[in-house]
Length: 292
Image 1 (tube, rainbow, N blue to C red):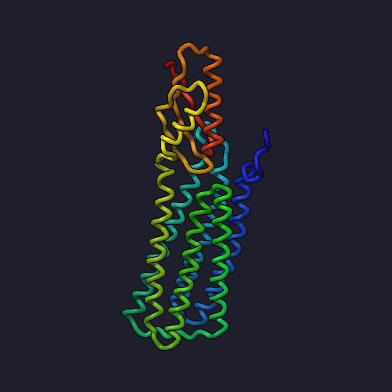
Image 2 (tube, rainbow, N blue to C red):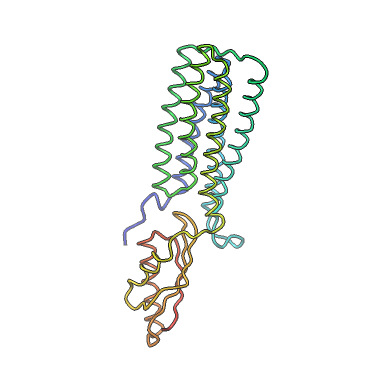
């Protein structure tokens, strides 16, 4: 039997390594945006810095949660700690919610108080463009590694990083307009940033909640069809599944010939288990045997 791929053997360590690289990249982006935002007196750029800071904070939190999620099952957690990773994605949503509130509050204050002059140099604009490129590369890498490693947390965070790049594009447009004298463009863009973050947060919730509430991981028909391809299986029923890659679990009852002895029935069940794991990428399968 071939040995497991390195991605399978040491997935938690690889995920943490990816997160550390992302943390460094996001901290650089935060510092760059803070520099431009403070120097240019731009609320929109500072809001973008806050958005990127949320990315960095979520990366740091994720490193801790991935370590916890990778722990082996114990007496108090017999099914393992996989769901801690999904909980981590909800923590990201919490950070995003705080960001939205602060952005909207600051933008509204600037709109109702007075004019808010923005003075940005060509160099500062170039720095903003560079942060956009950095976010695009980071999001692409995070999505690719998240898919390869089956990490829902990396995939969720990649969505936020992509949104961060789009946010910075909007910030850049707002700064350019404010530079031409349209002072209200800066706080308006900040509010638009908040709306983008709300949409990203909603998408993350949609991906995390099904794992936490044990929503069906696979269509029963797919499990039934695969199980019934095994010789000796008359039918497959009582199918349940839960989880997300790579921690997907399934339970199935198979009917075998009532004349089969215990050893033969056990061998059939073993074959069903192995085939389901191989063909449907399941982490663990429980097979019940009933005479037919």
